[in-house]
Image 1 (cartoon, rainbow, N blue to C red):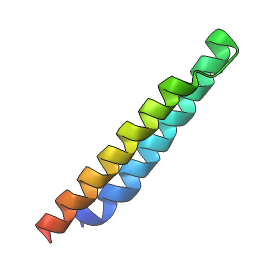
Image 2 (cartoon, one colour):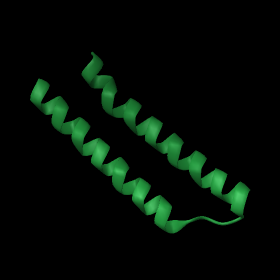
Image 3 (spheres, one colour):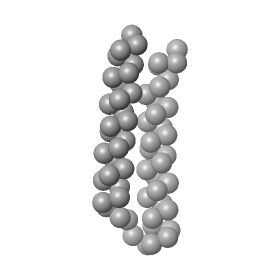
Image 4 (spheres, rainbow, N blue to C red):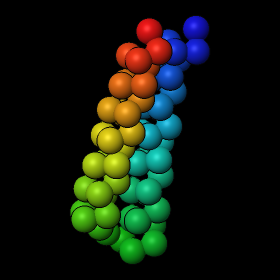
Length: 59
């Protein structure tokens, strides 16, 4: 049961963080910092891969 909810919850959280940081950058600086968001996307992909690997081990 917990394993089934892990990926959707992680994706919802990461999408929310990305949306909020984009919105924050626009509100504060009136622009988006592409380097910052590319690094964030890389870290998010890494977290998704780690989660999928951990769930495979626990099956």
